[in-house]
Image 1: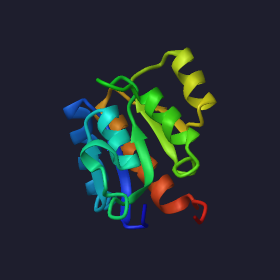
Image 2 (image 1 turned 180 degrees about the vertical axis):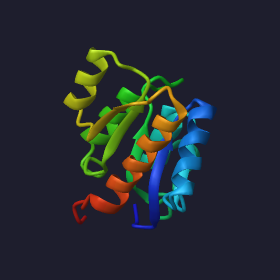
Image 3 (image 1 turned 90 degrees about the horizontal axis):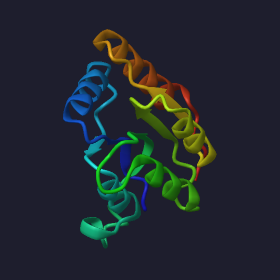
Image 4 (image 1 turned 90 degrees about the vertical axis):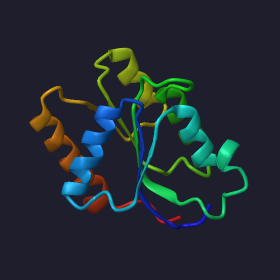
Length: 148
């Protein structure tokens, strides 16, 4: 994949959560280069240029960060995480789990498979908005990714 600009790959099947996330990132000028995908299968096709994205590996941008929900149709977020982190081409992409799951086994699995962070979505709107703002600020502005 080439280094076209893609700041955030948001993988979220819940339309309300996706809309709130995108709105908050836009409000803080962090969603200029964002792609939203609705399930894990589509995310894997995008990241690895397969399926409907086949043959596009030279034009698909590499995300600076993946915001990944766990509970999704087709392929769950833990499987997506595992595939991203087990492939040398993509293992350095930061993956932040953004989920409503407070289940300890999910948290343990995600870190075991290489998640860079695990954030439980706050139920309260103001808390959710603040969490997204801080998340974007840290991963897009403060964090220094490895050079490829």
